[in-house]
Image (tube, rainbow, N blue to C red; front, side):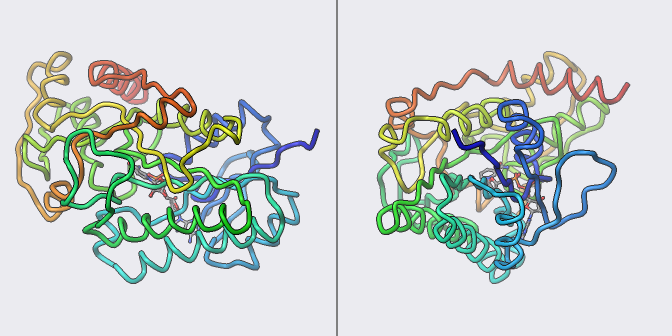
Length: 314
Ligand code: NAD
């Protein structure tokens, strides 16, 4: 059996940090090639600096390490994306096209593409948003993810490339800080709480959004990528539901641990993005096709976030 060599792009980001470490546990340390635009200092792990916008550089790494799969995480996120729409389109779309082309030419076994709840616009039911519905995103980030989903379907249909994808909700983890998304508040709030500082929230107290603990998100990714090919019926991207809550609900869950915790609200431009997104998703296809089931509710997330951030503080 051919040994897997997995290239992870954007590996120094919020998701990449945790996913890379789980992939190493699953496939072995020297089977995972972590890569990112940024330098990675002081680590003995297998790491290469790579701008995925440079297709020749990507091809060189695929050759050098005999790569068999690519997890393409590199992207500009939703809130940052609105500051530089053309650059966001350029980074998010062209890097993915480079990955798809290189995967096709080199006959790679599988590609992972992370999509987002940002693919939905205001014209869909907000609760239990269906898998198959018109996608009219309101951000350049969302537009780029819809394009990515359609390219995934295209490369599967035309070239048989096994591209798999998840529409992640807001991800919550303690391992690294988030990278400029609209749901970043749900990570930052825990750091402020542990430092016993007041948290100034950029969303209204009642803004319900779908979220997911990073442990669930990484497990979902690996379960999807390891599922038998015949089980995969969605070749754009799977809806995935973890937990849905609002800033006032997360604050209440924190007050169970820090009764004096204070939250203030000054909504900014991110409110408009959040208002265009669903509040919860129908993920029955993921549940049926590859047996997806979330494990972390809001109380579990709060308990683990606080205890892990407290440990780092000591
Ligand atoms: P992040 O911003 O924390 O990390 C992205 C990484 O990509 C960064 O380390 C950045 O340096 C790198 N990068 C950017 N441009 C690059 C390029 N041209 N070449 C190589 N590397 C480049 O993002 P994340 O939260 O880890 O998200 C990972 C993926 O998951 C993204 O595609 C994102 O759109 C998707 N996603 C994330 C969330 C979330 O809540 N974090 C939700 C939905 C979807």
